[in-house]
Amino acid sequence: MIRVLYVDDQPDLLYICKTFLEMKGALVVDTAGSASDALDILTEQPYDVIISDYQMPGMDGISLLVEVRKRFGGIPFIIFTGKGREEIVIEAINNGADFYLQKGGDPVSQFADLENKVRQAFRRARAEHALRQSQKTLEDIIDFLPDPTFAIDHEGRVISWNRAIQSLFGIPAKSVIGRDHRSLTIPFYHEQRPMLIDLIAAGTDLTEMGYPDIVVREGDALSADIVVGLPDGAKKYFRGKASLLYDQHGQVAGAIETIRDITSTREAEAELVRKNNELVAANQHLSTVLGNLRRTMGDLVKKDGDLRASGEWSRVLFRESPTALLVADETGAVISANGSAEELMGPPGESLTGSSVTAFVHIEDAPVLEGLIKRCLLSPGKVFSRRLRTCRRDGRTSRTRWQGRGKPGTGSRPCVLLSCQDRSRPGPGLGREVSRGPETGTRPGITVSPGAFRYTPDQGGGDDRADE
Image (cartoon, rainbow, N blue to C red; front, side):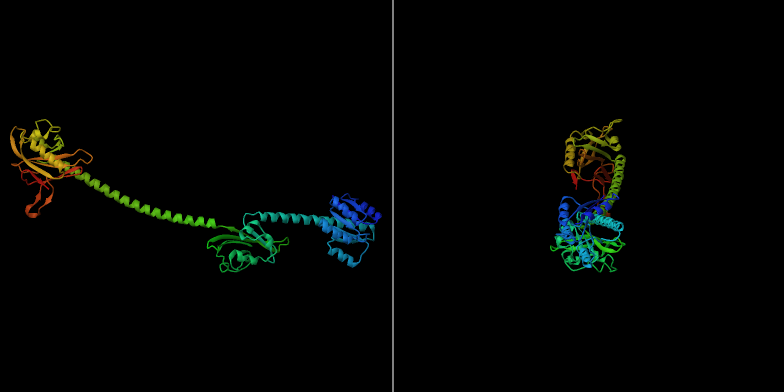
């Protein structure tokens, strides 16, 4: 339903016009006999269209039009008058009249034309209102975008400047709207240069224009990264994206650009690269360490194998030696004895293990043997020897040479390796491997090492002597 206010100082014409326009039921027409009455009615209720005569007492139709525009905005206004002078038509159009229609002629055709003008004025006003609302909505959307955004018309004048870009530049919208956007490059770049929005349709090499990092260029839109130096010496990284704007006819109407601060993203990427490089370096170092560990473990395994082989060989020598060999603890108790010792001193069919070594020498020589053991324990690694009277299995006593070498208690109790050698039977004794050259040969003995004894032949020695 279209609400119409018809203003005319002729009551008969008011009635006829109202009757005709309401015939189809699409229009509702109220009437006023003067311009002042019309203004009073307009203050009480709104109307979609106003129809007014030109020549009326007190205030004519043009004056009423001016007052309506001043007080009530852009209500569609139609001048319907019998005066057809050209100057009146021009004045009406200049003051914002939507249509000018002259009275006279066939009433049916005349009122049909008037109804058509009312409908046209109403549709146009509604379309313009919808457009304004759409523009207002679009402006609100742009204004509340989180990224700094601005738009220009086809002449480069700023038509939109949202809150985020106001905060970025520190320039309020009222100081920018309508200005040439190229004047804004200095507060942003600190120099006069093209903005990304200027280069959308340009065939210029963007590298030369200070935009080396083109992220995307697709049709009429492109985005690029830029580094901006701040007055305090710091750097800011921005990513701009610009696109052309078109009107309803497909013609370029302007352009829009958004600017996003990506400094934190760039810094995070740089930190990620740094951490990755550190990780690669640490991995390389770890690989080197692991390689060294593998080589060290290989060496240790080899040495362990060598030691095991050496220990086994020493045990064979101990067991098969023709010299009587015993191992005693710090109390003199026998821990181990080889076959030669069992044959020389042991009772038939009995083991020497657990017996005291002093039982195998003359009772008068027992303290001497105990002293020998103590000296060996006090000076591990040195060889001490004494000639003692040894009690043999067959009951005879023979003077034999006893040698001893102490072994410190590393993980086990300390012990002494003893050899008992009959001077009438040359054989091996205890001693370190000592090279005396080709003239004197090699000094014999058994060397104590961790976990094993090593045997070397002995040539004998003096009484009560320490071989060092």
